[in-house]
Length: 82
Image (tube, rainbow, N blue to C red):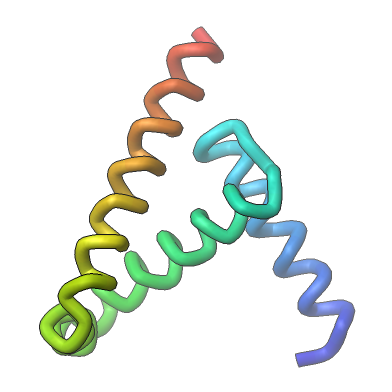
């Protein structure tokens, strides 16, 4: 992938994190990247997500925690906007 595309994708993730959770710190952007990747795979290839969940139960739990954290941050962000 060329640097220009990578830079543009980084900007897209940063903006998505800002709109989703109201935060753009690097650790929050990385959380959102993981969330987007896992959600996309789970929707487009459920058997792959199921296999991963079964192969790595600790990672499955960590992903569940990450998704819960993002949902919490999203709710807080929406409340502060109103």
